[in-house]
Structures are given as C-alpha cells and as structure tokens.
Length: 368
Image (cartoon, rainbow, N blue to C red):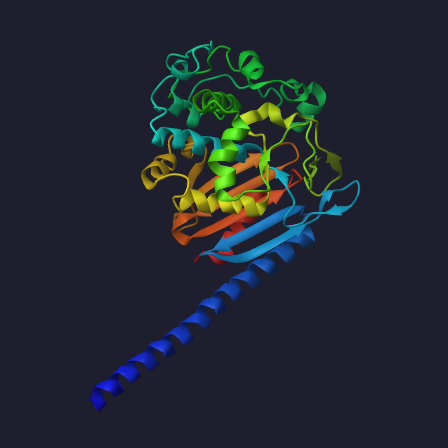
C-alpha cells in the first residue's frame, strides 16, 4: 500500500513538474514573437510614415497591438488602438457571411438567378446570373469605377461616389448595362455584385442592410465600434484618410465620397479589435457552420471564394485567407492563417502603405 502511495505521489510530482516546465516555454515563445514583431515594426516605422493600427493574435494571445501616426492630421489627433476606420471592401466579407447564413436557413439558393429575388432587376443576363456568380465575382455585370488611378479621379471626378444615391439608383444607373462577359466564365472584381447582394439581403430579411448586419453579426459578436457609415451621421473617433502621389511624399486629403453609396460592397467602418472579433467568430463556427465555411473558403477563379481570397504563403504553402479593403486613402488587410491559428490585421489611413509586404514580414517573424 505504501509502495502504491509512493508511486502515485511520484506521478503527481512528475506531472506538476511537466506543467511548470511547459508553461514558461510557451510564455517565452510568445514573448519572443512579441519582441520580434515590436522590433520589426519599430525599424519599419523609421523608413515609412506609418499611420493606422496593427493587431496580431496567435493561439488566443495578443502578439502585438499598436497604433501609429494620426487619425486626423489637421488637428494632430493621434491614431489609437480604438480608432475607427472606414474598412471599404472588407464589408464584402460581412455581406457574403449574411448571404451564406440565409443559405443555411433555407431562405436562399445559391444557384438561383437574380430575378428569383429581385424580379425588377433589368440587367443583361439576369436570368443566367446566379447568387453564386455574384458572391465570387463571375457575374459579368459592368464595372462602374471609371477612374483607374488617383490622377484620373482628380481629373475626371468620381460621379458614382460624389453624389448621394440609394442602392436602387446605383443599380439602375451603373449595374444594369451590357454584360461584359458570360456569367461564370471570368473573374472580374466588381462592386455591383455586392450592391446587388445587399438588395437581395434586404428583400429576404425585410430589413435595411445595416439592420440585418447588426442583427446577424455586429450585436451577436459584440462589435460595438462597427457599423455602416452614413454621411449625415457623426461617427465619433472615426479617422480621416489621406493619400500620397509618391511613397513618403506629400500627404493630401482623400477624395470626397459618399461612403454609403457603396452599401453592401464597402460602406462599413470598424476598429482593429472589432475586426478581430469578426474573424474569430467566423472561423470558430459562431457565424457559419463548418460545411458552409468550407464552401465560403473554396477558391474559384482568381483564387477567390465567397467574398474572400484563399491563397498560400511562403515555401511551405501555408494556407492563407485574406481580405483587402482599399480606397484612394484607406488601406486595410485582414489575414488569417487557419492552421496556425494566427490573424494579422493591418489598417492604414494613408494610401501608400504596402500592406501585403508588411504582412509578409510579420508572418515570417511568427509563423514557422
């Protein structure tokens, strides 16, 4: 009996020793990665006019969280970790998530055509364009962004953005012209696709897009610092945006636009922390079940799934899920490495930051 008792004590002591040994190693590794990213960004900031917020998490721990530069350069207001930013096309991932929730609920079929849900849609090919074509940008709908560069924008103006319009007006004026290619044959990144998806959401839910967004994602996930940007509303702590014509050159105010014109394609604002909450909820099954998430992350043409890109990173071909948001003055990148349980969020309120290059540097420092 004494021998058995002694063996049990030895086993318990051994297990305690292992736990006490293992925990500091994990903490030490996390601390090393934190220092690596901190020094990397400190050195990067010396040669680049960083302005915005960067948040990195791995296996549930914050590796790095910091802000740089100014949210408002006129009044020298520093960017903070809780600064809100217009996230532009990152909105599309929220929209695709809502569509796929409706698919899970049996309220929408992805192979149905547009007319099934929007019988008044008069665009060419409406009987052939499916919901899935809209999700993965293979619809063939015309593109309304006529200005391809900032110089063109300054010279020609941006009629789509500079006059307040409803989503109905935008669809009729810009999204119902002659099809540019047959549905399903070509990847053609297009804001019209997601503005139409926003209308489908409103039709099925009988809610305005921002209401559906809040009920289905923002409130359940606890994204209190996120919403749809309306011109008439004052959003506290919202950063202004700026652009440069040359790297580290003179800073200009961003071109004027009505953000709400982009609707379900790009009208949201958020914080780095809220975006992290969304990414966690999406990948841990709170917003979509595993089968639907797999569908969302199945790459089609252009390495694009449903509202998000699926690529590989580095020589090990590590799976990378990413979403960009960009305007003439905003630059956002959400990067998720699912198998490494690692998420990198880079938000810049200046146009010239190479968010992909910076993401790569951070990922190389923490993903082995």
